[in-house]
Image (cartoon, rainbow, N blue to C red; front, side):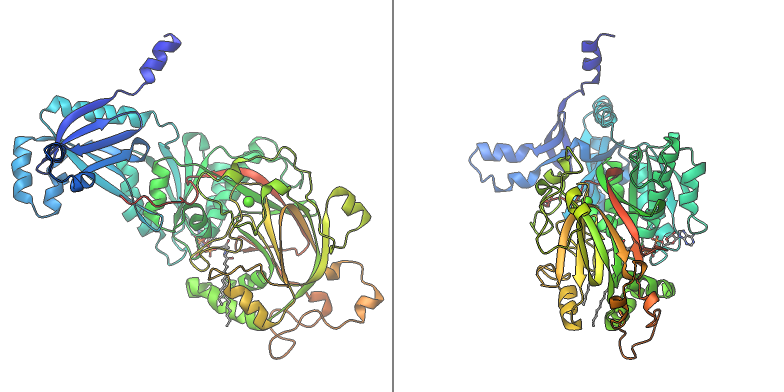
Length: 554
Ligand SMILES: CCCCCCCCCCCCC/C=C/[C@@H](O)[C@H](CO)NC(=O)CCCCCCCCCCCCCCC
Ligand SMILES: Nc1ncnc2c1ncn2[C@@H]1O[C@H](COP(=O)(O)OP(=O)(O)OP(=O)(O)O)[C@@H](O)[C@H]1O
Ligand SMILES: [Ca+2]
């Protein structure tokens, strides 16, 4: 076949017909990108001088790429039967028994999507079949849509509703869109990760879906990234290794406690919305931060890598798993009252100036320009501030070094927006820019820290405090103080950690050598306090499109 005839073959056919919907006649047009229908009666009224006010209400357009499926209608598909007009529907069905139903994405506000149906009646069977065939031809040209998925369900995540959510809300939509799914209900923690790492035949699939929370997503991330590196002979233990991006996209059906990754990539944590993003084949690249201790790989992070406050909250909340999502609030209050601080040294390599900065109020949204701009060199540092203490070696290589007493050290590779904090830990962090926002909260009063925390829940700037600084970085290191060579002067200082009430209490004692917190890495506790973290730009892709700027109500 010649190239021209090949191209002709791939060109979708266009259609235009007069079809019926309810008791009205519509001009229905399908072109390359849009299916549109407009009521014929109303247009005539307009041309005869009668008000055309209601015309827009009766003219609709949907993007072909947002059509879920088309099928031959059953009698039940008649719109009027649902709205009580059974008699009319029956009459029309007898008059025009040949009908087809198009299922499509409808936006309902708050970034939520729903699957809606519209049914068109045709004058004859051939026309009806032609419409179904042409719409299906168009859908088959959408190459980014998955046909086959591997689904892992955590039956114990969040409020333990994962299985029900999948069976009742997601599986019917996948069936409607002719997506085949192999489902594995996990039997233990790390079941999904281990299966992906070694057993799963990934050639069969166009994507992997997890039904659960951020912990379950983390399992899929680790399974898929590790599998990809193994297949390509890349050693994850080398902090400088150039990791190979994963070819399969990941879908998240939210059914967990925090669902921060779903929330920050879709704008809501709603299972039906996520299922529809998978069906239409959306693709959102995402940064992954690799975390090492010396030359030993620890974990990957996509959301929050936190030491001090959040590390302590997570450590405490692990013992309260039975409480479900409320465990974070209880441990949060307890940790807040403990008011601990930790000493150490943070070194980081700042991102270039043109990568924006965490306080520029440029939020990462669908089609984000910052994320589309790929830096030419990873090593060009931005200018470092004078206040920072720098060793000769470090200043020459572009590293900034900050030594201090910190209540929290947080690295947010994405905004970390979630229902608890709708704008997130770093509202202007980007999903796929190859950087993480490093937030340092220095020792301050309880009252000041509370003011800072509260700003995560309102519109005020949580970085606008003298004790908070934030840097956009490509890589950073942390060294807790007690692991550094200790000078006599250091030893004469007071203990580095204070508790609430009795000074020696809880998980830590006043023992100087234990004055450390732990890192929480997307909700998992790391076994080492001294770490090195590097952002791997766009290592994975999700079935998402980022948060949409404007809600088009339909
Ligand atoms: C006064 C209200 C202040 C509210 C401040 C809320 C800030 C919340 C920021 C949430 C950031 C979540 C980042 C998500 C990370 C996920 O990868 C991870 C795995 O699911 N989840 C957590 O680490 C789970 C982290 C959960 C952290 C909950 C922290 C709750 C703090 C409550 C402090 C109460 C102080 C009360 C004083 C009277
Ligand atoms: N069958 C299982 N039994 C026990 N634990 C499991 C099972 N399957 C997965 N897990 C583990 O459960 C943990 C929590 O899962 P998930 O993220 O789905 O729910 P969650 O309640 O939101 O937790 P998180 O707050 O960590 O996001 C995960 O770390 C995962 O490894
Ligand atoms: Ca990022």
